[in-house]
Length: 311
Image (cartoon, one colour):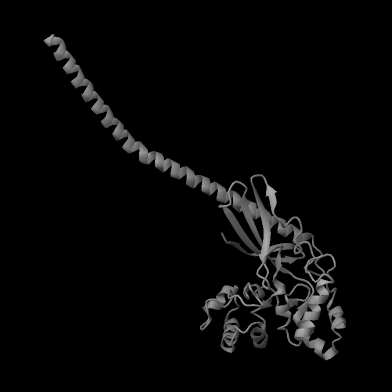
């Protein structure tokens, strides 16, 4: 009996030691594998996020290509808000592609609302060519000092982007983005550095047309009302764009002397455009990519002047 009891005790002791050893090994393995597993999970998540971002990038890239095609097939003799590249055509709205979608949009400067379409840069005021009075007339935020600083700077080196305005002394940080009652989206959408300085009378916002001397505010309003047609909305079937500048003169009943001052400031067609495309995944709203291209349209096709990945 004593021998059996001793063997039992010895067996229990050995089993306990074995169990302690197993637990120690298990704890050791867990301590090693735990961080490794966590690292693998994080790495998998990072890889998946990268794949999602790459997918949305190419979805947005598809949007840029579609926008470019719309510009290439468009009639270059005149450009208006009712054209396919601007009127919110089906190709510009949310287009599903496999596991995601793209859309081509811009923000309207007069309302701040987002709209499907492409922006022609010649609807804007060119800060590299506009005179001091025109710059000041665009918005009260352009003080005499800021207007002089803009002209002084561009005489040395033309502005390559609107954001370079902030390199000038005395320019407030919210100069371009500050909303007003007339311009909820700020004045950034009214300014450009592209083109020869002529403003497209068929696409320019009222705010831009009003600052072009010798146009009066009333004449600018008449031009916009004529463009929009009976429904008063841009980009609809009853829009009535101007076919040439002679038609503008006739519509305004402007004399030769006054029109001779206005004509060099206007055009009816545009060569410079900004396409902004957003790519999204269907499975998640978290991952998006937004790309922007500024292009010049000519007889030989489109030339990309600037490419940006906004997000």
